[in-house]
Length: 398
Image: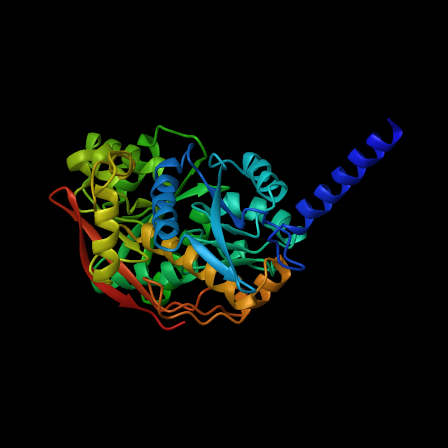
């Protein structure tokens, strides 16, 4: 009996050693991988909350990129890329929990997200874990500032502010009102940079109105603006406030040129504000027509699945967020392959040295000393007859 037990134990030991030896992990590359040759990239986006609509569109861009490029090769081994979707709920506190979950899940890199405040809140956690993140449409400078592990694929607020200030002056709006959301890093940063650039170009800010987060009644500040007789308003708020501002302005008989930023560039605005959205001007990271091959492929992919179309508001229209998220995924995959490693520190170094031209849509990608993409062009669009229409590409020298 003892001999039988010993024999069984020996067999078990051999089988155990064989199982360990069959793992396909490459040496030193255990993080985010498994015996099934998978590597996990985290998606840090708002599915819900103030920025849920924009986050959903960004996720479509990432999902499409994953469909186009489902694998990466490291040290001669092909890994299937698994996406770990976490909802930061457009909330700074929840963002920390979502970041911690992505870290605990063993992600080798993070893509996202939509909304600067949540990215700033999560940034130190990614850095401490030495997991590189690529911000998509989070344009506040503080997302990457002082954080070696947070990169950014889109342009920054100072650049975006200059673009819209130039547009306002070039189109004859020499006096303007601004609307700022107190405590919102994205909105306050853009109002500040816009104001500096606008005044440097000779423009005059005739009213600087503010509101608190979660407010929904803007009639008081809109009445103040109406009393000045100003013909244009710069309001780079989070999307949730856009239809409220537009609809309440119409109720008050306030007829102005609304100028905003990338957060307003969404088909959701046309759906929510209807005819009141006509005339709105906003800038974006990419406009349809800039990369025909991407446009055709993404549209075909959307139309293959009713759920995808529904997420994109039953439309196959392409917005800038789709393109930058596609690019962020491609750049992360390039970095993994360039590093030839699944180690976060190695991938971070590869991102620092990144120079991607061939597989991106919204312009070649290199990063500056802060981890921000070197961009010089923005696309300005206007809602005309219920649709976003590309107006012009604006270049600004930094």
